[in-house]
Image 1: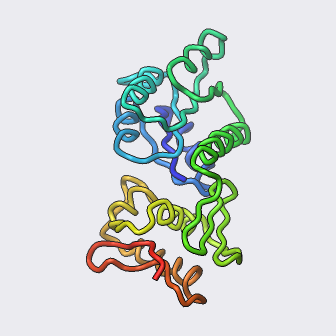
Image 2: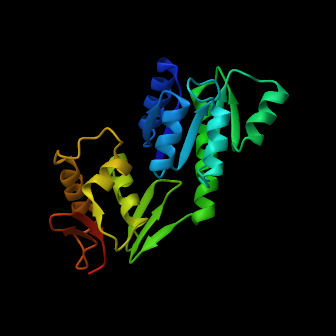
Image 3: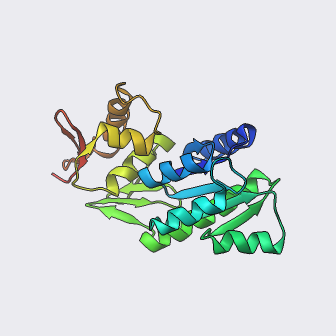
Length: 223
């Protein structure tokens, strides 16, 4: 799953990014409110972590702008302000949860997982296509009832495929969703990971699921 962190303190942003990536999340970082709004409007995030005190546009204003644009991605506010009035203001702006600084990463991760689970329940916990089943909360995958062991990046790639079945996904689309917006899509790393995925979910089955769309990208289709 892909998370946007909007945080102007570089050390805090790096701390959060490293921790979430170690848990298998794909993380983009914005250093101010305007950049955060721009990224959130242009990319399909599963969760946004939004600092309140930001340059150019404060976090609460950014959240209100996203909600006005009908972007319903869950938002977790991060701030040093901890009065009841501050918490109410954050929730009233359209955020889904509120965490005060300083915080332990374990607590942040627990809140992230709770919001991700909430979003997954709204979409349906398990995602299926043909004989493939994916649990987006536990990050587990089965093909024909047999569990498939995937790395974090292989899992993220497969989740993107299974959420967009029978659609041609260009290399740019895959790069932006599974890697990040700074990824160099002219490298062959996407093709390498698609081949890794094929070996794990297609090699032992007559029906192949991951197909190349020549000159364009890839598609998940049972044939």
